[in-house]
Image: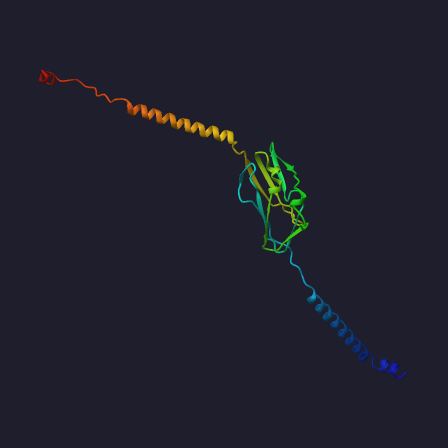
Length: 211
């Protein structure tokens, strides 16, 4: 009864007390929310690039083709290992269009390998098409493409495969070169064996001195 009378007699004091309580409660909530936000680890948006490179732009049929994937991203990337399928996508140019090529390696050539290879920022991995040389069995232009998880761009490199000379053709060329060299030597020898002749007229004085 006394409390009710106090509220009736001092309404402003009552309202001020509750206002202070509300302010303190709101301040506490803001403080706790800020502390929670500071404890949350924020992740930056991924930026950078992934680069695919090969040592040479031209290869002979049968040569081993290797590659390197360089992670220039600010976060790790995952490269999928599809062994016994080819490690990277290979395309062959036919009449101006790129046609996907497929190959299979032996199971013994990829035992106990991880299905995903993680590459840290600034790191790189090396690979080879040695078990899949049949992918580059025909002379022509090829495109090698790397598919990286959660990376929209498609790093690629174009190379050209050139037919190697057959041993028979190489022997024929060598024989031709030897025969040509022999012919030149015979011609030079015949030229030096011929006697040198001097043309000219004999003067009347010389003829008379002989008499």
